[in-house]
Length: 393
Image (cartoon, rainbow, N blue to C red; front, side, top):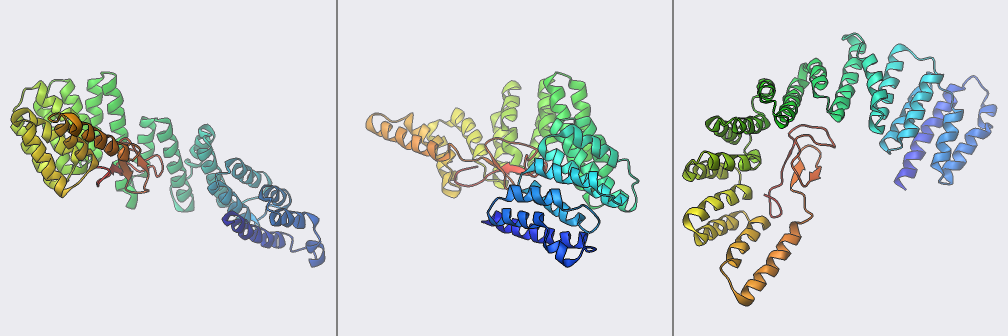
């Protein structure tokens, strides 16, 4: 029903455009046009697809009806009917004698259609052409919008070097910080790929570039830490990884596995690690930090001490993950029917969080089970963070 009302609105606008585009005709001839009535008939009979086709085929594209066609194309794109949106915008470009600014506006809409439809080559070709417009006045606005679309294309294709070059052109005005952050992550993407291929020198240079564009990016510290570990620079690795606490403590859990590896490989005192983790816990009540601390306490003080530690945390910040860990500790020291009951309780607790997301985008609300640095919905960087609460951290 909501879609039906949307079509009523758009086709009302089309009707007005129809009248404006043919105002030289007499009122009698305009009202008597059978195609117009046929389109309305399709709409009233809940056949919106045939109605759209009828109006597109019979509503002339001119200066008076341009906005109506653009509104129709935008509606179709928002509804996910991308083939129809492409047809509408291509139809405008093929039929109308447009001013330069209007033509650029339609081309931008068509590029957005191509992007969402996955026709990245077509979208890139169109945006590269628009990106050659002068960087001043109205043409400058067109150029900037085309660069933004081009950037999305390179992000989807994981062409990070090209994305860096385009983003540098967008580092101006109020959006400068946004694109500096993006460039920092592009360099991190390069560094992670280089680290995977054992190009340690290239990875180190990419990390330096990433830090240069956003010194507070916690991802740079994570990558730098892994790089230092691979080269055996354990002091540097610890310095990099512990810097995350000051950059953004909610990302500390992402560093724990590497940090534990450093302390194990370098045979450093566990008391030093515990002291750092306790300082992190004061900033963010993360169950991941608690469980990492619990491992160290268990090794030195035994099950009873660690059970008391976890229970004390759960009283302040209850989580199901903490509960399952506490149950495990008691299962190990229980026999008979009590052990069976604890196992049942544990299975219920696990089932409660089995399908629950662990991360959420702070910008758009996208949920996921694993950590992503780039939100696939709103395309923001470092906006996805761990979910805190009973079913999360």
